[in-house]
Length: 226
Image 1: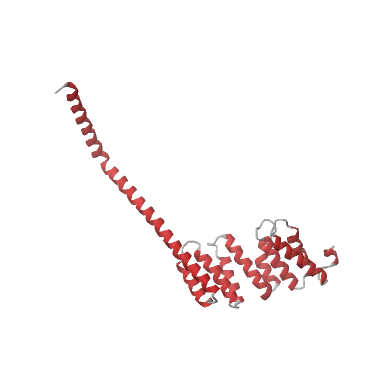
Image 2: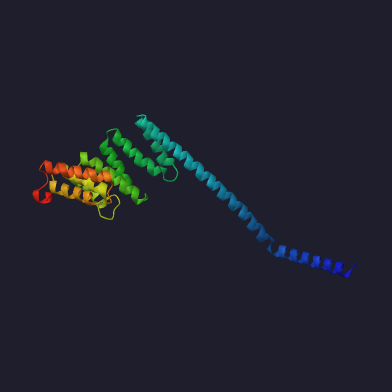
């Protein structure tokens, strides 16, 4: 055997001994790490599959409810939405509650719809934007069925300059004020909408129409009319 061959064998033995020593010392840790990696990857893959499946099922269920509403099958739609509220995934339970409240209103039970929207707006586990929308929906129903104070208790908190729903909130308040014979208040509210360049064009147009109506009927005081 040449010197090179001898030293190669010695080197391989040394390396083998080192590997054996290393494995003896750290082998269990390496196995644990590999198992954890495999298990973790599997769990993540299963979680992705499960969430996609749940979201897909909930989406199909919500779409089915919308189709039932479209076909005038409101009672069946409410059953589907109620089940989705209980078993739905992600945002679908909240969407189901909001749509169910709207269906209740479509059926003519306006008081029941207000109660349903109020429950959503009072639920602190729901995102604030959805809660505010529920308040607004209840306020618009109460324009026809409630008092100015009923509308104001829901819409006034949304009418501040910084609130993105201020235009619709002011519209609800303006209509409620007009209905209550509070011409000056109605004029002020619709004028705020008309002057707000950030308001949608159709909302500003409606506000201008209401201002003209208030003036033509004499509901706007002379000072407010300018």
